[in-house]
Length: 114
Length: 118
Image (cartoon, rainbow over all chains, first blue to last red; front, top):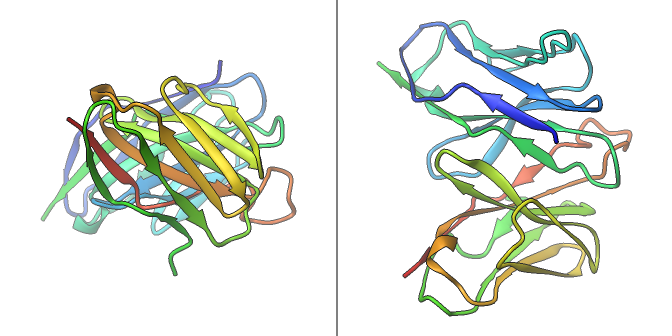
């Protein structure tokens, strides 16, 4: 079945460092891809998404490009801040059926130090 | 501005108790979901519902049931709580796929309910 694999954490960076969190997927259809973020004590919020190959999602300085040839959707940010410390989840959703249930990766904890 | 509300942030229950987790959304969404979140396992889908009174099992439905009597409310029920059900439970809602909306296919989550079963 469909699945998402993302790099294990925790990832610890200094402020203003470059961030990459790897995410690869397995899917039989043509899924939409998402990054969600969970700040301490909160639920998940959508960070960005891409719905087809070569789409780039971006938000708050984060970017991810839907790469069908490598089945990847890596999250990047050029300069992280302490406020970016959170757990990041990669997810996919296929378009089959009446619902859009998401399949999530295991999450990557990012800790940014001042 | 709260759109998905989970009634309890923290609960402590005893083994064998019946537990109700309530979720309400005010966005008129057709789809609602219950996930559990555990360290190292990410989010796993327990049940989902695509309409009132309609429900489908997710990946880990054992030990759980759900109720959707009204469009805005989706309840998760643990008939007889066990210690291995200690977890964070997350409710979410969305519009169905294929809607002509930028918000379609995007899940909105509640803040979560942390359940401890002793």
